[in-house]
Image (tube, rainbow, N blue to C red):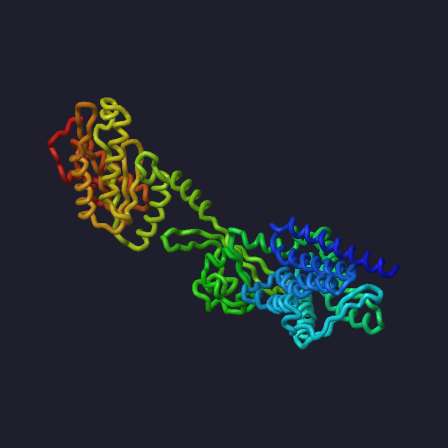
Length: 529
């Protein structure tokens, strides 16, 4: 009767571990499920070996069952440790994982080759007349070392889990507590084995404890959402975020960063936790202190492309005390590009690409004010295409648009980057020229007039040329109290150029505060449109 009870418990434990193995395989695509799956596989193999052992009637079959147990048993404690590290986000290198599993693989090899090696066991005996049939072994020093090793690893795992439990998110403490209890059971099982042997019970309770471990871990998975809302899933989401984040403590020391942040700041990939951010190249101006964090900033990559980021800072608290700062970097490059494009469209003339009249006045007023305060010289130029209506009437509006674009191109090539040029309206252009003398502005106007005169436009089988008239006014702080006043005087000079024959530059003269016009250049040659 006791034999049947023990066999039932062993089978139940095997069924539970097999069920958890299936769940682990089914959830293999879930973040960080590898060690859980391997752990349940190891428990299942151990349980399977125990079932075969107590069902054996001979030494040979019982020892084979013992060998089956060692395909799982030695790996349980190491996998518990690796599972705990993975759950708590402790990054382990491949060399570390292999070193943790080195002893279990060595034990498996020694058991599979016994009695040829004679290292792991000193003696092996089969007892069939007890409560249940079983193998009784006398172990060597290496046998004792392997058992001590298997006792220490769960303790280390629990230390990591307890630390995570104390410092982790309260939302997941119930889940963490369940996992702590589950990983403590291998330690308790070793204690109970000695107690059972001391009181003379002839069966090993290990499979029962392992079944309970699987039940607890299974509850954590199915009920508490280990693969859906646990910290490991949150970590997976954070690591796949396109937005970067960096965590630093209140003393300015680096704590953590996600993959996006390490790609953005490659030096973080080699920075160790606790490093001062002001010692990390390129990072101190962002994370050194709260005041240094700008709302937006741009970074130029190796290809010369500039990406723009918006910063957001959140304080991490425990018991209402700030312990760290999380700085998020939101990539706003596409938004910035769209805004720049919309701004450009709103401020530029769609036909010529020059600044439009609205932008000219908004920028010109600021520039005029700065020049007035500094006392620097400036000039205003008004440019108008002569007989432009005839171009549209004789050759059509598309050809007129071509003329406008061509003359705009001349102005872009002749004016300086500091000059403010715009399409003022229709066939009329204006340019506000800072830091320039009247003589230099006049020479520039002549270059534009001559370059325009040399243009030749073709339409069907004929060709035509156009000219421009230009009015020029030099700013006088005593008379020009605003941009409009300077623009008005340049426009009056343009009007004089038009009335006096066109294709010429007229500069306004100043005499006792009254505006007079004098023709600086006259060109008698006519160009037919």
